Length: 442
Image 1 (cartoon, one colour):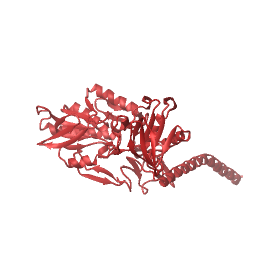
Image 2 (tube, one colour):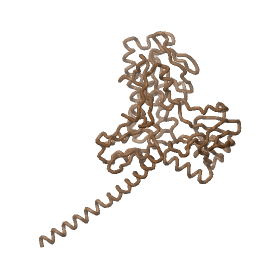
Image 3 (tube, one colour):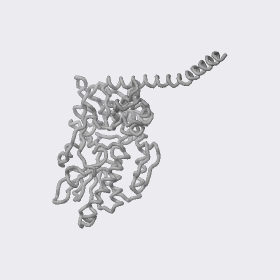
């Protein structure tokens, strides 16, 4: 009898264990198959991350999968054969949530890949470059996370203020500034607010709009996933903040601090003027004791170097597709920005005729979701894609393309170019800043 009871108990234990374990095993197997398929597709297509992204140390990774649900962008990381892999490299925008989620510190955030190097300037712990008095903070210095970029901007100016205090910050007369800040993105805004709090004489300029790289993110993109500090505002505790929400907070803080930001003002040169810096912009010349570069890595829009690209109907960004109705539109590029712009402009209510020109065979730099949306529109005829094509000349109502060995003229009342940005490496070298090339290493 005792033996029978033992067999019954063992059978019940096995059955109950199977009922508990089987669903978990099925879910895990399905998830791994999905991650494996995504990873193999990314490898075969040669997809690479465009910016800051995670690399996984296989010797440290124990396959907990804590990192995979942490990312607000979805399946950027996946678990294959018990180890985390970068399954969707083009989906990553550098939130860093995976870094915080990993319990064994197997993840590092890096720029560049093994084959594509990224140039990063050398900076000291106080954010000063090898050029005395010239500082770099934020994305340009290798810090792509918004929260940390803002922290760097604040820390850099705190150090500058302490340094200048002994020499009398704000004590010089005339038009000499204590600090000149280039860039009104996360790092530059935090720097300017900290400078205001410290009583420094400063100016801040940006060649585009307030927000830096964030301003160019797609609508409703989640850009912050953990709490962070903003000078003059305090702690932002929301766990998931969209682009629009963050920009609204920044504008609220700018108004509260009475911060004047000179947007649409491009810095042309920075040079020594005795013991000061002379900064020449598209509007005027400034003189300052210290300079902080808080610009992003996107740099200036890359030009096509073709006749007609300076025409007024040619643009290098799209603020709102709803501003364009009934136009023949040509979009140039094959990344997220180009495909998202083409998809937005192809909204049926706008009645635009949209063509996209891309020099490649596949959209290897666009995320899977953006590619799918665009390809669905192309399949229905709402967007025309001309692959393996390059712009030769832009006319008032048309564009000449070289398309797969033949000449093609496309009607275009509007032209939007998304050919990436020119990294400010040449600008940095002109200033004498030492630059290293990083190949996907921490």
